[in-house]
Length: 155
Length: 155
DNA sequence: TAGCGATTGGGCAAATTGTCCACCAATACA
DNA sequence: TGTATTGGTGGACAATTTGCCCAATCGCTA
Image 1: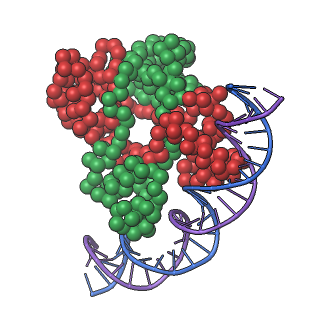
Image 2: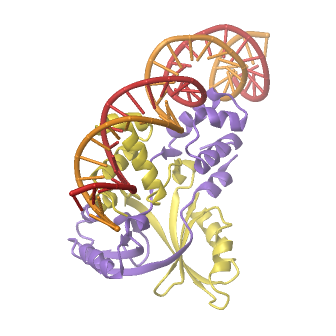
Image 3: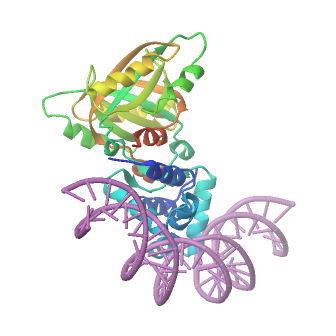
């Protein structure tokens, strides 16, 4: 939870140029290689870095349409079975339970607006879903990022 | 845009075990090393894989609260200047322009509910923002993922 | 049938990794 | 005050991996 300047620089460096290895990092940051390795191990152990996997762009796969779908669910059986079934839909990228008028919020993608209808129909058909309300993301002026947050979190 | 079985297996493998290199991938998938390299280059060139950077968990940095904030903005000057100023707030992780009653949707994080108020105040203070409406994410039964989508997109 | 893109299997030098070690400085603690 | 503990440094080593080259083969299509 405590992040210092070196951690921030390390994360920033790896975010901007993921291909460079530990050795190159240590050269760029003017520290010993062992230090970089230790820092990365520590960040991973603390759960700050949860993975290094490839980041996929759905639009490049033809899924140009992103939408946020708010669900109202039948409260009786709880939200877990609903979430489990939503997870079976590939186009559902994430699901949250939320406060406010709705019960759940899903991010979904689709190949087109017509295809979005199909995806929404899949969601509506999920047992326990009473009603849905969708908004389409027209543009994404700020794509998902965490670097500014990391910088702000430094001690 | 055309993804085949091998691409899917490669992305899956790298997502699950990002540390393994190209050579190890080729061994696991029973293909030549050059093939794996060529596939990765192609996926990157096509924009399917947009990065390999470390994935950061905001909660591990103390940002336990996630919220979605819908904004109504003064339409006159457009949304670009608003988005630019929102981008200056580290706790704003992403911004979309949307259809429906609201004009923009932001994902924000904060250290606590009280801290969320501070972040929302920062957003309200942005020039052009007329009104905000927030929902807090209580739980995330399906965290962000793209693997099922990748599998579904295969030819 | 000829051409073309993709894949294969191999080879090579250079770079990187994983894993040790001893040593030093700062800090916390009894 | 003396003593662990922690984090960093700099170096060493073998083993592995990378980047880059090549010629041959395969499947498909014009």
